[in-house]
Amino acid sequence: MAIILWFDDGLIDTYTRAFPTMQKYGFRGVCSVITGRVGNVWADVGWRNKQLMNLEQLTELHDAGWDINSHGKSHFNFDALDGATAQMELIDSRDWLVTHGFESWCFAWPFGISGNYDGLALNVYEYIRKTGETYWDGKEKVFTTTIAPNHEWHGSVTTWVDDVCSRSKELGQHAVILNHGIRRLDEERDPWELTPEEFESELLHIANSGAKVKTVRDIVGQKSGTQVFVLGAVAAALLLVL
Image (cartoon, rainbow, N blue to C red):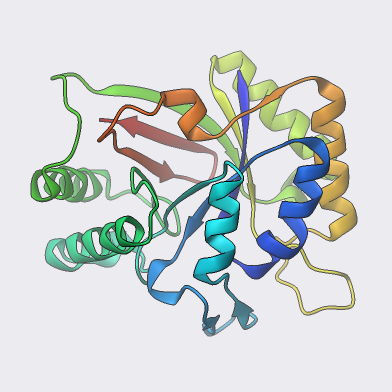
């Protein structure tokens, strides 16, 4: 079992706080970015305004061994999109990543999955058909992960990590520790965001456990053209390596 340290959205906190702290421990992470918002302030109703990383910052992460992948172009809920719009969200995001030197083989669904599995699968396969770049050997290679979206549901940060890793081990799966913003208590925060102290305790706990921290690339290999789709749900994620 490996632990994947995952960061959604491409928030500036990932660069200014997560990146240097992880370097202390020799850890590399996975960042799924909203390609149509890179370098901008993301303002959505009900959430705080969020500064997102720019291209130079993403490139620095990538050069340090991080995975930079897609979280869609606009962070739309794919369950609510028609097929043509969903396809363009995928293709436009992929094109942006390729243009700027990233692999474009991993996609994380915004908002996870709420039940429209058939629609999501159709979008995935249509995306593959249109891009024409996917390695395909006639078989789906599938592995699952246990994913933790909110440490407050588990109690302390260390309990959160332990719960995810324990369940992952029981199921023979990889553990994904999903992070969003890292914000001080005196800063505007969403309830699922960690403080810098909580994030440090997360990394220290993982380091002391002796667990292997890997990126998705480390796990699935770097075969040219491989596509990975991360179908995130509340309790689990499904990564289809096609």
